[in-house]
Length: 254
Image (cartoon, rainbow, N blue to C red):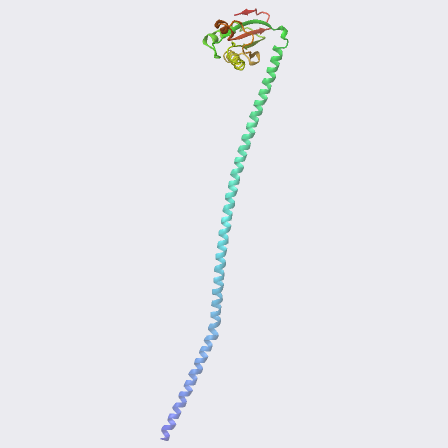
C-alpha cells in the first residue's frame, strides 16, 4: 500500500507540473500573439483608414474636376456665343457703314443735280422779259372728267412736235371747269386736269419738270360766259402756252 501510494503521488506531481507548464506556455503564446498581432492590426486599420480617406479625396477630386470641366465647357460656349455676336455686330456695322456711304453718295449726287437744276433755271429764266408767247393750244374735257382722251393726247403730241426746236422756253398749264358744282369741287377738278396734262408732257415727251408749271383755276376766267351746254363745254378745258426766248420761233395758235 505504501509503495502504491508513493507512485500515485509521483504521477500526480508530474501531471501538475505538465499542466502548469502547458498553462504557462498557453499564456505565453497568447501574450505573444497579442503583442505581435495587435500592432500589425493597428497598421492594417491605419492603412485601411488612409485608403478610405484617399478614396474619399480621390472621389472629391474627381467631382471637382467634373465641376471645373463643366465650368470650362460653359465658358467655352459663352465665348463662342460672344464671338458669334461680335461677328454679327461687325457685319451689321459694315452694312450700316456701306449704307451710309451709299446714302452719302446719293445725297451728293442729288446735291449736284439740284445745283445743276438751279443753274439751269437761273439761266433759263434769267431774264423773263426775253420770253414771249410763242404757241398755245386748248385741250377740251368731258363733263366731270379729268382723264386725257386719245384725241387730247394726239393734240399734245402734235403741239410738242411742232415746237421741238425750242431751247429756252417754259410751259404754263391752266386747268378750268364750267360753273356746275361747288367752288371747292371745281378747284380740285381743274387741278387734276392740269396735272394730267403736265404729267403727260413730262413722262411721254421728257420735258424737264422745271420748264413746266401747272395751276387749277376752277370756273374762273370762262372762255364763254353763256349759260347753255355749248358754253359749258368750252369752259371745261386746259390751256397750254409755250413761252420762249428763242427769236427764231414764231407765234402759233391752235
